[in-house]
Image (cartoon, rainbow, N blue to C red; front, top):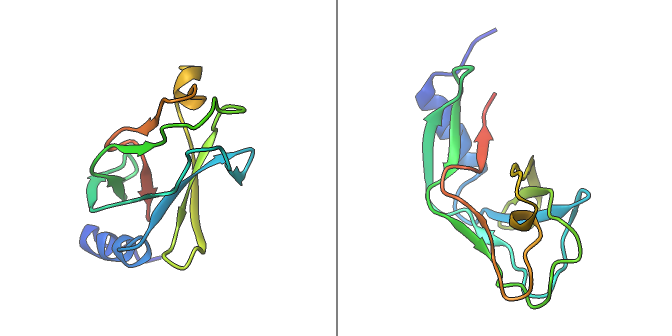
Length: 122
């Protein structure tokens, strides 16, 4: 089986997660509907290498969701990448030990720090 070069992996990732890609938050596999929540643009990509030798597309800047209009009803446990037309393209986990980071109180934000959202071609 052929393996894509790092450049080809970057081109493929940019083709799938190009301009217009938004990131949404999930709870129990469904997009949340909390007051104050809106999907956020992925923005310009940054690339790094995974331990397995794959190129990884990451968020170049912090992604801020909120502030919440009311306290979150339950912890956020995942994220989803959507094409500009709203089609679901990828899902991933929110990885944090701090419960407050996943369940913001009223007036607070949920932040995915730069480089923490990873999309892998492999």
